[in-house]
Amino acid sequence: MSLPAEIMEQTTSPIVPKASYKPTGEGRSGGNGATAIDIAEVCCLSAITAGALPSQVTRTSPPTLALPRKRGGNYTVGASRHLVAATIAATMMLSTAHAAPPQRIVSLNVCTDQILVDLVAPARIAGVTHLAMDATISAAPQNFANLSATRGDAEDVLARDPDLVIAGGYTTPATVDLLRRLGRSVLVVPLPQDIAGVRAVIAQIAVAVDDVAVGAAVIADFDARIERARARVAGLKPHPIALVYQVNNYVAGTGTLVDEALHVAGFRNGGAAVRTLVSGQTSLEAIVTAPPDLLVLASRPDAYATSVGDNLRHPALKALLTRLPSLVLPWPLWLCGTQHIATAIERLADARLSLQVPQKYSPRPQTP
Image (cartoon, rainbow, N blue to C red; front, side):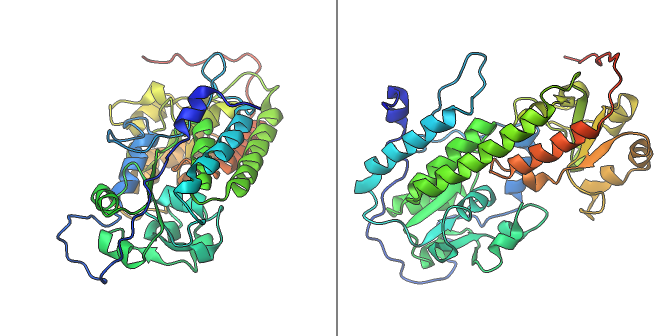
């Protein structure tokens, strides 16, 4: 099977090859301006999932894998077959960059942490973010119990002598810049905003770590789970409105990964109808006065003891939940564009199957 030319063009050189630099020692000099991994990254992710920020900052970065689209702009499951073929081609092209599979991989992003750990053996992972072990952010913190956490600054990373560093678009830019200038192999991947983007990033990382077969298996399982969930709700009409409500009054916007997850599971996203701020936030009053058919909470009300979670503990919301169908869908499942979005879709499909929608259904008007 021959590959489309546009895919072949974009699968070349997705990483910067490593030079022979060796670290002189540990320590935090602070002279390079590197910034340690911080909760601010999670704030960026929250705003992105609300549709208020682009998924990739503007900077020169390695090209990412492109997938063909069908009419209407939606990716098909069949695109995964093109993806697997493209990753095989990319692996052959990268043979000059990697004489052997990388054995000391450092991940600087909580999202890439969660993909990497399903692709390679723990012995090959030299470091992940401390956020990977945090159950309020990571979808599978137990997978990282025996792995070393990095602070995210350049000194810490270099002390691990990595042969591959994987980062996200918003990850410690000063650290990434310095590592590249020192000749380290660095792969920067975007934050996926749709299911096809998740496939592409899994494949891109699988190529970089030289485990294409494992990546293909992860993608195949991912696709199969999503298609089973889609088939379970395919015949259900009408499509009720679901609203994903987060701490600090964020709601999931359109054109996001969770937006597509809602559609796959048989819902319409009500986020656009209640958003009152360009930041992707709303007011609790807007939800109470025009409630959705299903309210999806991104976390339990008691998960965050700080003021950012006060909206989930508000008496008005508690009263609404006594008469409105709801679902707690932990945001670690969909905050990052990883294979864990399949679990979120499965749970949403379960909720759709149990939701009783009147036969004569009048859709709520959507505000511009």
